[in-house]
Image 1 (spheres, rainbow, N blue to C red):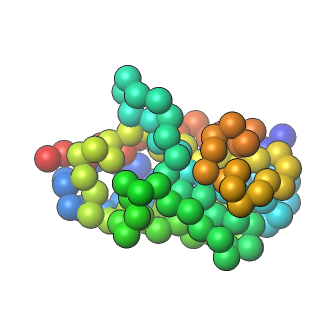
Image 2: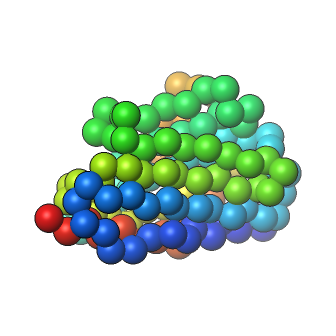
Length: 127
């Protein structure tokens, strides 16, 4: 059973930074892509960032490009999301996710290709 546990959320002022972490367990972590998604109250879940198993391919939503950076440490089975220059519109619950099988690069930005999800960590950005 794959488990994903996020941490690092909190309350921050606009322009500030947060670093989210996701610890994975239950299988070989290094063989699979990983993704971050978020969901604000009353809105649909949206893609934030994704990273291939090798770390060589990264995708970001246009709304976070240049501000967020995703990384992974396969030795520690963790992924991180460094969030800088935060804006009030970044307020949401953030989830890390993993697929149950290898997926194509083009699939990494779509939530339906991910089978395992963490419990989420809340990020609140005040204006």
